[in-house]
Amino acid sequence: KEEDEIEHLVNATTHDTILFFTNKGRVFGIKAWEIPESARQAKGQALVNLLNLEQGEEIRSILPTMKDLGIKNLVMATKTGIIKKTQISQFENLRASGLIAIKLKDDDQLVSVHPTTGDDHIILLTRDAKSIRFPEANARPMGRATTGVTGIKLEKGDELIGMEVFPSKEQIPSDKRKKYFRDILTFAEKGLGKRTQIHHFPVQKRAGKGVKAAVVTDKTGFLKTAIMVTQVIDQVVITSKMGQVIKLPLKNIPQLGRATQGVILMRFANKGDSVAAAAVLEKGGDEEEE
Image (cartoon, rainbow, N blue to C red):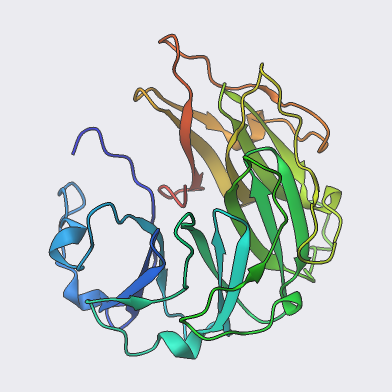
C-alpha cells in the first residue's frame, strides 16, 4: 500500500526456512518457496494469508535459518529487558501454525531477535537512553518455552527499544585507505540523532543498569530507535508518525560521544509530529532494517 514502509529485508534461497517472530513471543516457519514470487513493483502477499496470526499480533523479526553461516543461537530481547538465548536447532521443522519462541509475562512483548555465533557481544538500548553491552556467553542457552533472564535492569517507566549483536573480535583492515567503522545510530522522538562508536560502550556484566547512550531531555524526547551501522550503509530513512519521510546520507550524521543529545536531523511539517521509525540502506541496496 502507498502508506506502507519496508520494515524487514531478508536475503534467502528458495530452500531456506524463513522464521517469523511476533510481539507475542511466537515463531512461525515457512519455506521461502511457499511465499508467492512477485514482480519488484508488486504489492506482495498479506502475511495473514501465510501465517496464523492472532488479533494484535505483529511481526518483530524475520530471519532465514542460515545453517551454513556459523550461526549457533538465536537471542531474543523483550520490552521489559529480558533476554533469552536458544540454540538454532530448536527452530527446525517449524510450521505455519506457530510455536512459542519465548514465554512472556502479561505486560511484556518481544522486541528483537538476532542470530549469534556463540562468541558475540550483545548491546541493549532503552527509551530512556540507557545501554548495556555484554558477551553473549553471559546468557546460557535455554529451551523455547522458557522466560529468559534479565538483560538490563530498567528504571520505572523505561522499556527496551532495541538490541544489536556484533562480533566480539573483529579484523580491522590494516589498509588505512579502507573505510571501517561500527556505530550505534540513535534517533530521539523530536528529530535529534547521532552516531556513537561502539568502543564508547564499555563491556559490562549482564543484568546491570547500564550506562548512558545519549542525553534525553524535554527538547529531545525519548529515544525511539537504535540501529547498528557499518561502512556498508549509505543512506538513512526516517519516518514520522504522521507519515513524513526523509532520506539522508549516513556520512552527514555526526559521530558523537554517549553523553550528548545529537543534532537535529528531522524537522516536522506538522505540530505534534515525532519520529516513528528509521531504516538504513546499504550501498546500492534497499532498506535493511528498522
